[in-house]
Structure formats: C-alpha cells, structure tokens
Image (tube, each protein chain N blue to C red):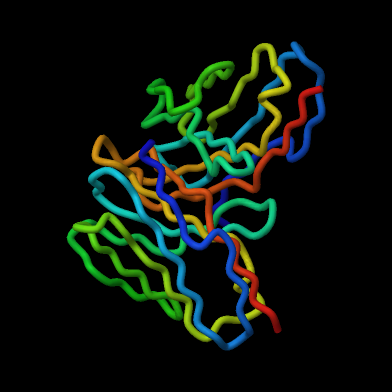
Length: 111
Length: 112
C-alpha cells in the first residue's frame, strides 16, 4: 500500500530536549516536505527536499533541521524545542511536486 | 503572503444538498489543488487544476479556475455525511512546484 508514515504520532516533551520525527514513504517519490499546521494559520512549509542530499528552507524553517540521506526518509529534527513549536506536523511526498501524499500527522507538545 | 484564502470559513448543509467553497489567491500559479482533511488527520488530495484549465470534474467534485480573478471554487454535489471535513485549496505560486501555499480551510458539516 502506497503510504507516508510518521513516527511518533504523539509526543510530549520539555523545552530544550532534542527530538526527531521520522518520515518515510514507499512510493519512490523525489519530493518530500514538512509542514506544520496551527489554528488560524493553515499549513506552512518548514523544509522541503527535491532529492537525496538536496534540501531547502520553506516558509518557517527557524528552529528546525532536516536531512535527506536516503530517498525514502526525511526526518525532522528539533535541536532545542521551544513551546512555540507546539503544533501538528505533517510530512508529505510527491512525484515531481504535484499531487502530495500526506502522512497521518505528529502532534507535538513542548512544555 | 501567497496563501490562498477559502470562503466561507465554515459551512453547514443538509445531506443531499450541494456545497460550494471558494478560494482566492494572490500570485500567478502553475496549478491549484484542493485537499480534504478529516479532523486531526492527514490531508488527502482531491483534484488538481492547471492554470490553462477552466473546469475539471472528478466524481461528485467540480472545480473551476478563473486566473483573471485569481479564484477557484470547489463544488461537491449531492453531499453525504461522510463529506464532513475541512477543505483546503493550495497553490504552487510561480516559483516552483514544491512549495504549496495552503489557505486556512473551509470547515464543511453535512447534517444527515
């Protein structure tokens, strides 16, 4: 089954404790991206990747890092999480950047 | 901001009625997409319309695009309770296909 998986689905952590949210797709897609969704603000792109070892900033990259060492994986790293990073995070993948397939979401709370 | 804006923010209709949602955007686009999101879940792609297209159909969905007005509409015909969800339009802007700019969505409630 074609899908994008994210782990963990829910995470409660404390300020400053490094965390990684994993994302994996099984569709051999070149494009992958991370979004955060906040009430009243819609979805905003954090980082995207057009292929292995090619990443670039989206609209709200501050406080986040990503890596793309393999085509299927695109982890999101929060080196020092802060409460303003409490949000619902989505990973998405696509072939040539058109129709995006979204993961189920990771709800992150930073205390 | 390049974000699209959906209108209305919320819509409540009876099952069997048609639902129309509108989207306006600010910059030139290559394509516009509509997505659906059930509460707290991932987004599901519904339909993509390219800038040189004016109308597109998919099942009970009909999308129109007016690039001169920078607007699009999504029509869901013969709505069902299972259509209850939030609907988002997303534009790619003119700079590239990977960064989609989403609006804040229309929350549709279909009453059985």
